[in-house]
Image 1: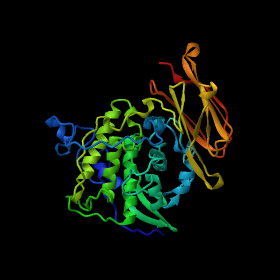
Image 2: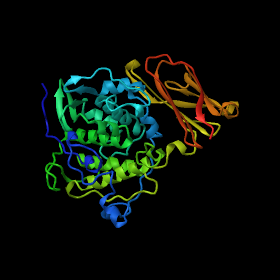
Image 3: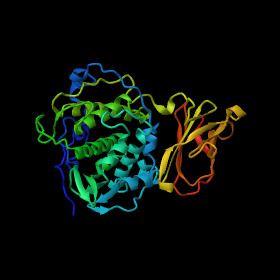
Length: 423
C-alpha cells in the first residue's frame, strides 16, 4: 500500500512547452513554444517586465561540456548507472523496474523504445553530473542538486494517467509520482529542453517534502506559491532559480554548443520558464531577468584548454577529462586527477589517477593522423575495472568524443583512428 502525503502540484514548466499535455499534471499553456511569444509582435525579445538588466552570474561548468553529445549516450552504459539505481528506486505503477533497454545514439531510438523509465534515468544522470564539483550555487542547499534531491526522496514512481505530485511511500522510502507520457513528449525528452523540464519538475516535487503547500492567488487554482524567498525558495521558486542558472550559465551544461536552431529554441525555453515561474507568486515576486550576453555561458567544448588538477591539455589543443564511479568498496566517484608528462618531454599524452597519485589508472594520448587518413586518433589503456567516462574535446573546432567503461568490468585498450575530424 502507498500513502499520499500531499496533493498534486500543478507545474508551470508546461506553460511554455509546445505539446506538453495534462498527463504531466500541469496547467494549460500560456503560450506555445512553437509559436512566437506574445511580446514578439511588439518587437521585443523578452517580456516587457523582464527587460531590466540583472547582473550576470559567473559561468560554472560541472561535468557536462556539451549537453547534446551527453544526451546521445545511454544512461544504462554510464559508469554512474549503478550508483543512480542505488540512490533512486524506479517504479512503474508501484512495481519495481528491472533492467531498462537503451541503444545509441539515443536520438535514433523510436518513441516506443525511449521508454518512461529510460527518460527518468536520463534526467537523473544529467542531474548527477551537471553541477558536480560545484558548491554554493544553490541558495537552499550547500551541495549539488542531485545530493539534495537524494536527501529528500528515495525514488520515482511512474504511473499511468497520473499527474506529478509528492509524495507516496513504499516501505520506508518516499517516492515522487510522475505520469506516463505520450509519443510526442517522449521524443521531446530526447532534447535538453525536455530533460531540463523534468529535472526542475523533480526539484519542485522534492521541495514539497519540506512543506510549501500551493495556493491559488495568482489566478491558477492550486498553482501558486505565497511568496518568493531567494535563500529559501518554494517549489516554484526552485524552478525559477534553476532555469535562471541554466540561462545565465550559473550551471553550464554546454547548451551553447548546440547547433542552430536548437540553441535559440533552448534560450527561448529557459527565458520563457523564468518569466512563467516568476508569475507564480502572490507577493514578493522574484527579480526580473534579462537575457545575458552569452545565454547558457560559453560553450565549454570550444573554450581554450587550460590544464588543471582534473584536465590534461594535449598539444595545448585537446582537452581530456575523466569521471569515475564504482560501487566497490562501499561506493566512490569523482573526477580523475591529471598527471602531466610534458616535463618529461611527453606532449602527446598523459595519465590519470583515481585513488592515489602513486597509482595511475589511465594512459591516454591523441595523435594527428590527418596526413594519413583524415582523422585525429585517440588511444587509451587503463589498468582498472572501475567505471569511467573519458571525454576528449578538440578545443579548436568543438569536436568531442566520449568513451565509457562499465563498473566492475576490466577496461580494454582502445585505438580509435577515426576519433576527431581534421577540419
